Image (cartoon, rainbow, N blue to C red):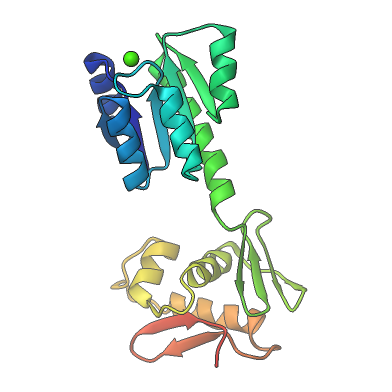
Length: 225
Ligand code: CA
């Protein structure tokens, strides 16, 4: 997860950058509004933390430009200003949240996580689709030709992985590490067995067949010829 911090106060900026990095985020720090805008327009961030009073261009204008350019990333305003009017203005301009300085870092982190969760639900496709096979990520449900198919948790993960990367041949080693969290070196045919069971459920009674074995390489799911 990549976060852009736009903050001109050196101490606060460094503190944010360090704290967020330690929390596992990749952080870019811009020291004024114009730099912030430039960063936000030229790189893909998952979230921006915007100070309001900034040299060059204030946080409100940065936000206006971002939304004007069609950037929908979550924006959290961070500011010393604390009047109702200013909060309302920020939110009306399309900020997603507002935190007043001084703030507790734990609260900032909690709000960031909430925004990222909300953002990822919107951004991510909720249903993966290959031909008439559909995997609903939110409801954890799989259907083929409209018919409900029950999968075990591992089968679901395996199918989700294949469908997220449909058309791409996935090596067994990758499937092993992503679905079973193990090395392929472990002497096991667990993947073959799981793929066979998955096929029995999603392919056997249907045409066309969607899961293909690419000998010596791995498995791929695709809508077919
Ligand atoms: Ca400032």
